[in-house]
Image (cartoon, rainbow, N blue to C red; front, side, top):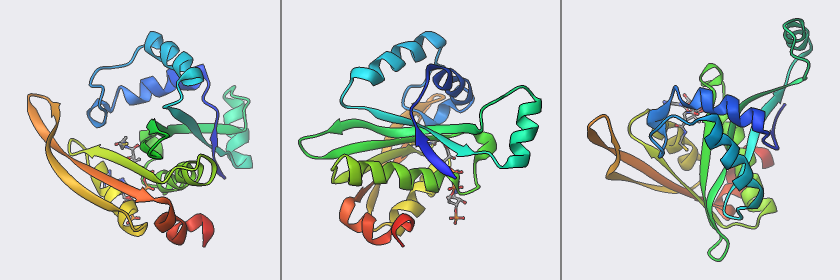
Length: 189
Ligand SMILES: CC(C)(COP(=O)(O)OP(=O)(O)OC[C@H]1O[C@@H](n2cnc3c(N)ncnc32)[C@H](O)[C@@H]1OP(=O)(O)O)[C@@H](O)C(=O)NCCC(=O)NCCS
């Protein structure tokens, strides 16, 4: 089972390590340090414009036994993080952010995580629109194009949005609204 969970400081330190191998996907184009993650952990507790979660799955029994023999005792594995940033409570919009650890990609986990984040946005936080931006430095725009089309959203491609390695890349900007999302979301079918 996939679920959202509270992010711990240890999660954030692991996440920095995974993320630093994938720097081209992110707006902040430098590797993150433990000090960055400690500051971010404090900020998460007080900043009303950000709400982030860890994304974890319950390990199957055999997997749990294997993991335990390696000295890890928890029945959960956190394999990504995601949430809502730039939350604008007045206009009821927020920007989605998502990162799935490389070893866990292309297994449908990203799609399930987006469903859970959208559910938080629409069914618990009363937001109306969730938008996002995926840079053309990676193939992630194809993931978001698929999700947006399946959920009745709208999108556009803008040029010159990300400067990386001495040149500009375009970005795919998309949005999904609560009414259309509820009609199409796998969680409610
Ligand atoms: C983008 C990302 C979240 C996708 O997560 P994932 O768990 O691999 O996605 P899923 O397995 O749920 O993929 C769902 C669909 O998208 C497609 N897809 C996923 N990642 C893709 C990629 N990089 N390129 C092309 N297609 C992709 C899958 O093939 C699948 O298609 P299908 O439904 O036709 O089979 C993940 O690659 C990631 O964390 N990337 C780095 C961070 C990032 O770019 N975040 C986006 C900015 S907010």
